[in-house]
Length: 277
Image (cartoon, rainbow, N blue to C red; front, top):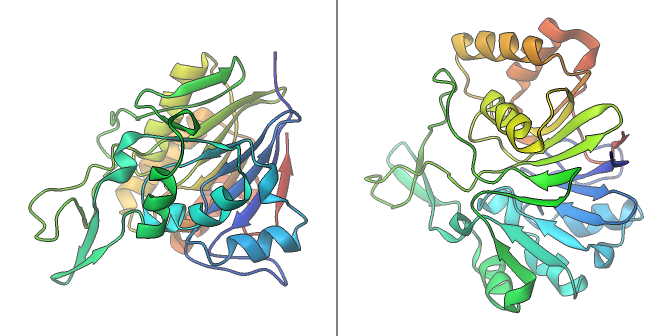
């Protein structure tokens, strides 16, 4: 059995005419029976873009958080205020205090206080915290935490759990959504802090299928070395997806490298784009 999937990019670093941009990501996913908001951006662009695109956030049945960074969770107060019955799915690690440290300066990048308050105010039955993923049906689910198996996928960065930079943040809460369509598996990523190829291998394992048809979302390759990009492209060629839609944190140089290697199967994402599988 498969599912029909319609994905609208609501929030991204790039946008079509008349839509707001921000450093963030949000997807509106329709399966025919279920509406899913996957991530919420920072919160500024979500409402205006949803209105401009004719999407009623109050119709969300599920809200999924790919991880606990501010640029994916900031819109929670807005959507939870509208979608009174929506159930939130996240890894318990989203609640961790998190910091980015660059040039000796620490900046908080975790859940904004209003977003945390909105989650904590939810009735217990409307907040599902899972570490190993979930299957809503045989054709739709979340990966849960992703094993880091490809050594070349440097999943580190300036991320820490304390302001002093003593405890690196492995971002264990990073997860992606998968759907089994008639074309093959469609994978929807947030930032892919676990590594793109690690994520695709996890999807194949939990979905019980091999064929990756499309990947859409942030690939977190903006700081990737030439070696990592070459190995990533090699791995993608092995998976042979028909479509790659890099968004958000992928990085312009990485997008250019992907296009050079994989041609027109790569289409850079932007708010306002709609994909159906």
